[in-house]
Image (tube, rainbow, N blue to C red; front, side):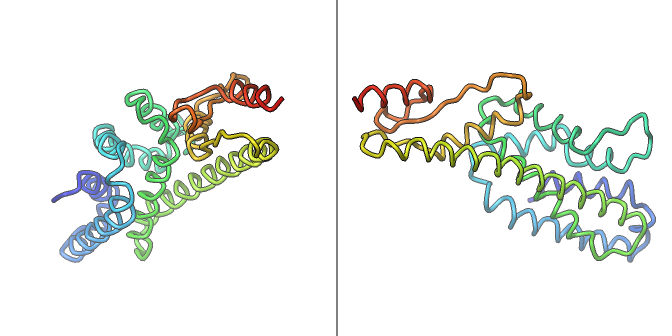
Length: 230
């Protein structure tokens, strides 16, 4: 079955790298790239995320808005009037997806990882090419993948610091019966972190198994535990 995202990427390569894929040798080279992309995407993305609740909507969004190709076009566009920074372009589509599918907002981090892996797959498929046209695209997707990697690492680092503070706070109350679900807390913060500016209030939520996994305000839970300890 043809992968529509792969088909979009191949169309982009045919458009931007006409000389590289002209003639019989060029068409054979393009077929090899297509086959490699399908294999990479199947192994790196579909097997890991294909069964996730958000995946079908995200895949449809990528095709409907031609997300990957538009981001690459932007990076390769030399016009100063049309160019937007890589992070600006990526954030635009990420936030557009969350606006269209708010039920998947808690998966912001995983969706960013998928986008990063698409760029990495394209880079690996083109990396051995010595054609000037394909090198432009190859370098662009490499920078996009690295940029997303740095951003995801930064978010993860900040959340680990938050987790450490929360672990320390709750560690002082080991005698209480409430068990906090920190994985759920992390997921909640991961989806909210990129959507708030520094001067906006970020509401803190936490989950408690003793409350049948309902979402509670973190401050209310901690105050309740403080009172019950007296």
